[in-house]
Amino acid sequence: MNARRLRASLRGWGGVGAMALACVTALILALMLPDSARGSGGAGVGGPGLALGTQARDEDCTDPQDRSLSPSGADGATIDAIKNRKDRRLIVGVDQNSYHWGYRDPNNPKAGGDLEGFDIDLVHAIAKNILGDENAVQFRAIPTSQRIPALQQGKVDMVVRTMTITCERLRQVTFSAPYFKTGQQVLAPANSGITGYDKSLAGKRICSAASSTAYDRLKSDRDHHKLAASAVVLPPVPNQLDCLVRLQLGEADAVVTDGALAASQAAQDPTVKLEGGTFTTEYYGVAMNLGAKDLVRRVNQVLADYRKDGWRQSYDKWLAPTLGADSPSQNPPPAVYGRTT
Image (cartoon, rainbow, N blue to C red; front, side, top):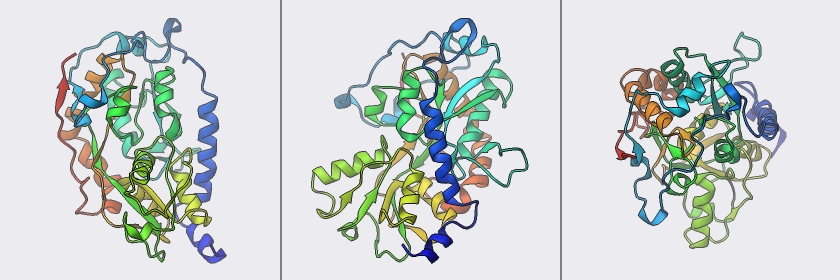
């Protein structure tokens, strides 16, 4: 990559280079998280409901986004434990580096900049419903690869971090009904000659994040010869934003990630663009511990209300300008509840 392009790519919103530093900071913070969070009476995050619940076997799992519990406004053991904390705060794993999803705006007049974005708006809505205060939240920045471990180890109550609902993940955590529809897409330098997820990736180095559906798809397509044989699937990076930095440094030729995230990154860096359409259909959900059934039902109740009042305002504010009017993400996905216990 020449110096002119690197300088151009670091202009604008505050510099993706600064975002890369934030990625490193987030990883360090994640590694420093305590083994059990502090709650009332010594209870860990997520309360007593940490035992494994019903697991979904892959061979029986279809349409994973339709397998959540039905909504309920009732409290339960997990919610009681959250309310009984000394500081009465919801502890939520989020991203602090995804532009317009979960990020700190350097132009925010408040010291350090508050976290804001589409995912952050949803967190505030959940906190207001459960605790009566939208700001009763302790945000914990976690890298892509640590989303499931953070839940399993009781470090957070939930993860709201552009997390796709999949059958494999349903064996490890539980999800709310979907709150966003997207799909995998290719992000590449504007003059790269790459046209999408097709033969133009031959001989190209492709970046993706660890523990992401993009990396899983790349590995599967490579192993089943559905990806150009000469395409190189690079070792995954901890955070998805790291792939954009690798593009800028000339260490990767293309990124495969969710189209909604890619659109926000293209808005940050005018030297890259989305190539081709989405080639998968995926749904984001709020992830929680397998045993936190009362919390899942409560979040689904929040989402049922949020789809009617709140979702559209947040989408128009954060995502509509980059996704465009014809995006498959422009409406909230319908909720289908496939579990009763």
